[in-house]
Length: 341
Ligand code: TXA
Ligand code: MG
Image 1 (tube, helix red, strand yellow):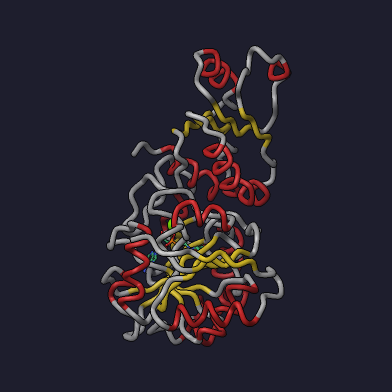
Image 2 (cartoon, protein in one colour):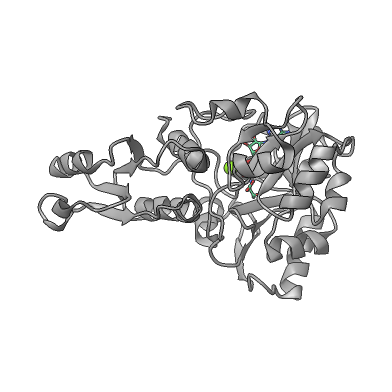
């Protein structure tokens, strides 16, 4: 039976206290609330209540072997969630929290198994969005929150994206407009001899190294063609509905060939070739010229893919960004999105 999903507008910088109090009450009584963070929208539940967390897995259709990130309002609250707080955690938290960095640490024994997929570690982060922080403070409980999308699909950067996937499955979505980061947090493990990057994200390896020195092995394979491993993740993830192809050479020829064969194509490119102005060569192609800066690109990527899905394209061709560390997170998401189901 579908339930009514209430979508409530809140000011991104100054959320209405009554709305936040209502959302907090839903969370405290075991319900789910989707809320904005500075990266993507999250689907929150009381992290200390296994039944509440179970509802996240149900709503998302998420495999139970994929652990969740637990969100806290400040460093002190985050420390309650872990059994050890090494020097590296102290320094990373001081430098990047609140912000898009997730630390994997030994879990405190208050954290239910369902949150960690039964493992000995827990992922924790203090988000930087005023609405997320207001909600965490009002609820006075830590919130387990994956991205608020159905499993393997694109992460939501707007409340409308959340509604597309989860309407009828959750009671409330807090709508604070588009998120600014656009890509998920960087996940780093501090349970290995050296801090190890598990998921590249908005905080770059260079920024991490500036705080903790050399990273563990995984980072040295900086940008292989295989997605970086993370527990419980199938390679396909962050995927639009349309099949996505990576073009190492920009894709102009490929796009043109597909279009001439009658395929409705979406194209993420860095530059439109002069031929694109001839209506016949690129007929029906929906093209977006993407930013040349990795952070600006990240902020737009999912929104563009959502738009291409909404436009009903059958194929998405993406001009691959350069194979440099600064583009690592974007390239990782594109490789995952291009992995066949
Ligand atoms: O930006 C973000 O991180 C967003 C917002 C909502 O905070 N959340 C998010 O959550 O992207 P999710 O569940 O979509 O991705 C969590 C990632 C997964 O790759 C998961 O495998 C990894 O973090 N993860 C969670 N707990 C872990 C653990 N104990 N050890 C290693 N990886 C873990
Ligand atoms: Mg996700």
